[in-house]
Image (cartoon, rainbow over all chains, first blue to last red; front, top):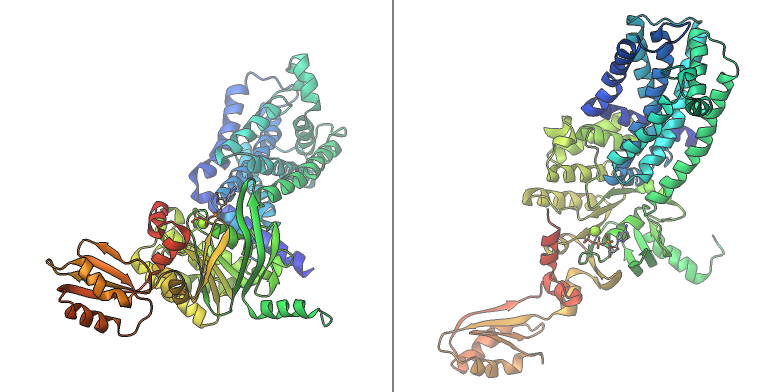
Length: 257
Length: 335
Ligand SMILES: Nc1ncnc2c1ncn2[C@@H]1O[C@H](COP(=O)(O)OP(=O)(O)OP(=O)(O)O)[C@@H](O)[C@H]1O
Ligand SMILES: [Mg+2]
């Protein structure tokens, strides 16, 4: 019990450190504030007129999708940060201290969750300013946000693995982009799946992003949920169950040399 | 515990009293044998110097003792704890500064040290006061509130050393602590180390600077190709590999052969050296050698300009033992 508390304490120290760095690294700060806001505005005003979303204003249709995409990218911080810490010897510094060894990875992914929460708040604020409205109850909205954060947490573990596999922080980041971009664009995040060619439709329907975005729409806008919420939960937990242990194992291998 | 065999209880007694004990420590990377059966005993409250050319295995040894790396074979105990099986408890007892500074660029000096203090579980208050104390001590007071990104190489190195001392640990590992430091910071670090040792800490340091080892280390191990090739106090090592030499600078007209003849009886059998008008005779430890040499040369009517006993330096030790010139390899490393 005391060990568990100490491990939580250590994780919070590392989380705090990971978050403190962000305002001082302008590229990261811009990536998590200006960029999502810019995407919201670009999509709404540039594509909004051209994309048909029957039954919705485009901004209402877009918000759950774009928040999901931003959150899935949150793990970028873990990929870049972890890769940097490894190369600059900080991981060695941490490993020589009497702290919980799990705190290095846990503190990384937890920091992503905090950043994702902030980015979500910012995007919702901008969305509300340009006409976005929630159509559900507060508990439903909060459940939707929690679900998205959980999905983002799963992606943090995928990104952690990228950070541990990549040869540099930059390549860790770009591998992440290569995974997340196609997945979000070939999903229901920005355009209705029905508007895609049939081959892409098949992919988009099976894509976990479609499932998570549909679940978020149900919880934010009150669209029929079907079983999307449970499937989204299952996908998130499933990804964590697979990628967290793989990332931890990889981390152990990397630091053993 | 009570039923240990005599030999085991002896080993335990040695390890309980010693700050660091290694036995047959070996480590290979893919196809490099970095350590081959290293045996060391470091008594508590002392400075142990690890000397060796580039690639000798110094960093590998430090990393194993600091629980960053697992040995392939052999055992090591630090502060009474086994480095493999009792790593978690061991880490409460050590402070480590690696060969390259490991500090967070985006945090300030203060934040770096405070974080390390918290991870030693010192509590926020103590962590902060230690951070301030150490910043002042390492002459980083003014830089302490700005991001480390803006620090010079030597300042980073100093911050990294400060981090190793945050918890006032009983055992401190410093891998080339003064590489890249200016002369003033070097001396100041030496004094810090001496003070910590006087307070009871044990310090194991690696260095490329032989004057540093000479000045600081109570005992020195010279390692090369992964093995300890000599171990002892600085004086012991010097006497082991090189004797004291009588060096005579002859006057312009003097004949070196006559001078060598005059001094022949004083030599210890080793070949004398002649370089122009400078002759040097190995005399070993021989009280009154200077007076005797002057008298003999005077009797032989050899004119001399200067005459001195040259004591072996750690440089001689290093050169003789490893076949490398210490300061040359240090030069390659310097940034
Ligand atoms: N991660 C690694 N992978 C492969 N070989 C390694 C690794 N680290 C060290 N070595 C090899 O092990 C040997 C010992 O290296 P080590 O870093 O311990 O030397 P050192 O005495 O600290 O040298 P230096 O004075 O240059 O710091 C060298 O031959 C080195 O090439
Ligand atoms: Mg080294």
